[in-house]
Length: 155
Image 1: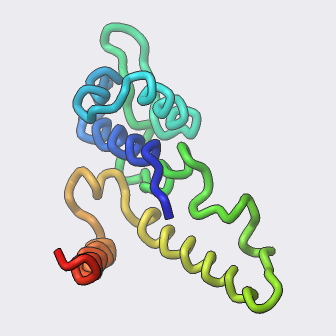
Image 2: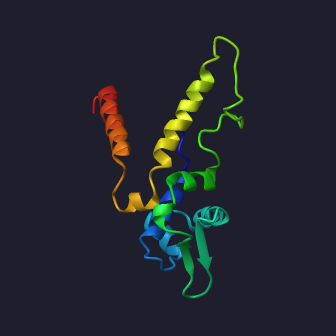
């Protein structure tokens, strides 16, 4: 599973908007604070606006705001807005995917991966991220990852 730079930047931009207390935040401010190219960020913000996750306001007091409360926007919403479906398998629906032997169980693996992603990305909201309140299950998975990575690489 690869998390694209685009998704990473989109989530960071959403976090910036979430701490803005509802006041419009200039794209230049997000770009500077998160070290994201302004042109690239504006492209991402357009996708987020199209997905109705952010609003924009023109003028000297303008900028971007979240379209709804940060508690109502999951990381999965952001992911899908900029990258499409979670864990897509060559643009096929997993429900109808089947392979001949000996790979007949592979769709089950793909479903488990998508389910795992959903379990994390759909349960973590932008508010959870900025308020440092990640769900226990997410913290446990992260700790397990750190532990197994350290064991594997001896760090």
